[in-house]
Structure formats: structure tokens, C-alpha cells
Amino acid sequence: MWKLFRRLTTNVFRPIVSWYLKQDRTFTYKHLTLVVKKGVFHPGFFFSTKFLIEVIGKRELNSKTALELGAGSGLISFYMAGKGAQVTATDINTIAIEGLHLNNSKLNTNITIIHSDLFAQIPSQLFDYIIINPPYYPKNPTSQEEQAWFCGADYEYFYKLFEQLGAYVQRNTVIYMSLSEDCNVKQIAEIAAKKDYSFNLLEKKRIMGELNFIYQIVSK
Ligand SMILES: C[S@@+](CC[C@H](N)C(=O)[O-])C[C@H]1O[C@@H](n2cnc3c(N)ncnc32)[C@H](O)[C@@H]1O
Image (tube, rainbow, N blue to C red; front, top):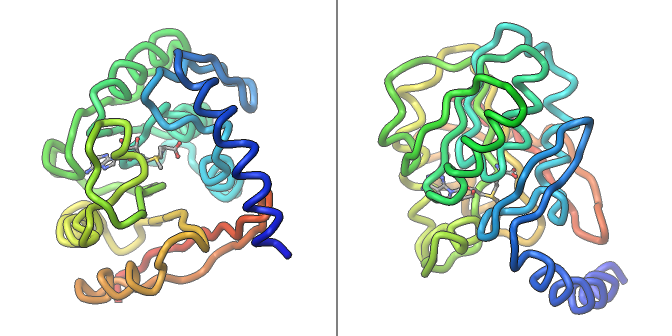
């Protein structure tokens, strides 16, 4: 029943969304108004971003250091900055980086913005929080925009992520990752396990027919 509902909503919804996203848009959520540049993952149409904010909102963030790896529009980063965190927002997409700078000055926040392929350009440091809403469809991206969705035909994004993550985490680092029933959670968890990380399911929620998950990633 959910599958049919999803197919119907996706078929109606997708063409409208892709037409709407052909230009820069503004988006308001929890008193934050952001410019979402064309070619950047829009946090209003896909539910993972708001689900992560819901979960992060339950944590004490004041004076904590937080990394949003692959920040896109930066909604999560600006939300965490509003809660007093010292935030680093990164992305591989240069348009996302432009948007992050634009919103950082519009919102008068002081987040650190780094153009980086995963951790490559992030100076060595230990974070209290690492928040990841990753691309998870197994296909090679052919544009910057597609990097929001595709993690490489052989899940290269996840192999690199779990290879590099260890240098930025301490015993108490809280790592949250959003995934969905649309992706191969088992395979991603197996890639993580090769580097001694395990996935603990923290919350799950069906939104517009799609089952969304937030996992806490812990070092074994
Ligand atoms: C699903 S979007 C999530 C965006 C944002 N975190 C949110 O929740 O709204 C994934 C983001 O990861 C970025 N990304 C993909 N591969 C990356 C990589 N290798 N290094 C850094 N960022 C990457 C994409 O450009 C995109 O902005």
C-alpha cells in the first residue's frame, strides 16, 4: 500500500519539484530563511534534513563543536549555530559553498565553511558532533548537483568516509547519519563495519510514505 502511495506521490511530485528548482529559491524553516541555490539539495522537499534537525534538537549544542559533512544549503549547520554550536560546514559542490557564504553573511552567523571532498581539506581536529545526510544511490555522479544523490557505482563515498572519519572523532563524538528504506542500509553498514564502526538505529519515521532512519554511528 505504501509503495503504491509513494509511486503516485513521486510521479506527481517529481516534475513539479524539478521545475521549481530551476532557479535559486528562498526557504524558511524554524525562523531561518536561507537562499537555496539552483543545483543544491533543497531541504524543504526531501525530508531527511528536517528529520535530522528534529533529532539534533534534542541534544545540548551550546559551545559544542559540530561538523556538517556535505552541508548543501546549510540548514542543519545554521540551526546548530543558532543553538550555540561552533559549526564547520563543508561540501564538495562549489555552488553549495557559494550559497553557504551567502547565507552566513545574510544570517550574520560565523560558521566555518570549507570546500572539501569528504575530509580532504578539513584541518585536523576532534568534533563533538558530526552530522551526515549522505548521497546513497549506487551510481557515479555526472555533475555537481548529482553528488547530492549518487555515492559512486561501488559505494566509493562510504569507503572513503569510513576510511577518513577516525582522525576526527574522540570517544564521545556523536555521529548521526540519515538513511532511508530507498538505500541499501545493510551494504553501507557492512562497509562501516570493515573500519570497525557499527550503526545503531536511533529513530525511524515514515514521511510521505517513505521510511526514514537516523543512525548513530559508533566505533566498536
Ligand atoms: C543529500 S545532500 C544533504 C545536504 C544537507 N546536509 C542537508 O541535509 O540538507 C548530500 C550533500 O553531500 C554533498 N557531498 C556529496 N559527496 C560529497 C563529498 N565527497 N564530500 C563532501 N560533500 C559531499 C553533496 O554535494 C550534498 O550537498
